[in-house]
Length: 500
Image (cartoon, rainbow, N blue to C red; front, side, top):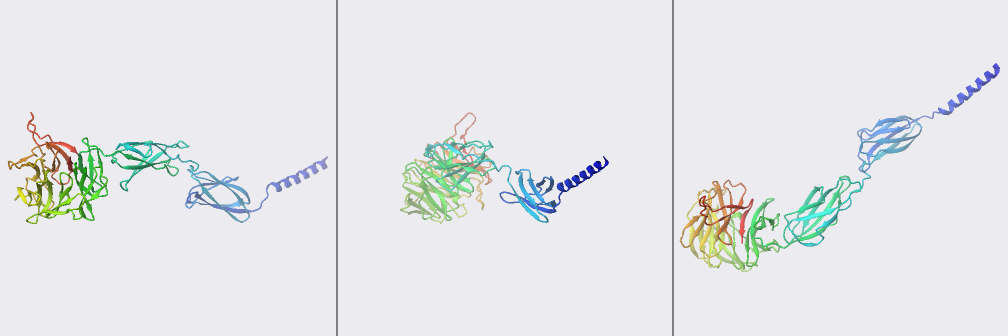
């Protein structure tokens, strides 16, 4: 019995030692090195968690994305890299004796599987639509597969200039585009973005705005440092008719031929141009430039039938056909003073002039006939600034301004410029600026089409405040609250009015 027990113990010992040698084989160690980078641009990812399976040993990538495992037993492993905002990445690794195995994790952003929105479909207005109002609602549609919020950009171009208008980051698939120009073709396209993928653009569509309405008002506004001519109806609905990249001013409309003449800077010279009321068909009339004291003080005039124009060139007054032909010297000032303003009477028999020296002073206002002979002097021998000459349709009245303060300075600042009407029959002038606010000036007056009113610019005499266009009657209304010319603001932040 004892010998059996001893034999059994010996057998168990052999089995135990045999099993121990099978389950714990040792074949040496190696090293795992690697790097964690972004899949798209291969920028390093720091502080990524790198886990070795099945040991579950963990290390973190350094500032350059590198990591290392030392003394790893020979064998097959799985290595994973994890980082917030990135998809977890796995790599199989085989460690060999005394060797270094290297692996690189190219981690994709967590949203890499996200799909972009569909290209916007432009719904309204229809492609190549015509007669569109100057304010139009643009409508489009787009869908996102994951129902992500869609952000839209709208790009607008036109066939008049190289301007590109961008309306950005809209969350609605509609937009009201306003302040358009008459008789202009617009091109529009829309992009959709889920702010994960690249924006997707729609095809371009176009529409054309309606023809210009019979707006009776023209004036000038400052846009990006340039004078821009605007057309407006009686309610103040206006639109630009000249390019904001060009300096254009002093519009004068002729109803007989439905053209607008204006001044524009070209190669550092001031030239006279014409255009349609909507700003199309611009034509350069002059080759001899329009010159004198200050561009902003220069003025010209149509003949009543629209066939000719007169304009100043320093001390000379020229007549020219609207097609640029037939340049003729009409008048030259006897004393060499500059002609700044002129107005041609409706019957063509008389021209009113305002002249001044090179500083804008020593002014004279007088009339000449069509051959340049002086007929009558209205203002002379005074100090201070004057201007705004405009004849009534019957040649009986002359509208002008004069700074009654008689102030003169190098900056041409005016302190108390007032509007006056001179009566050729009586020889008297009447002040129209009795209701003017103290500390302001009235400049650039014009008769209304009925000549019962005047339109003009009023602004502070500080020379820097905003300028606005006003209207008022030329006769007081004898109301119960006292005599009043009933002055009203017509257009804010605007100058150089023309009312036809």
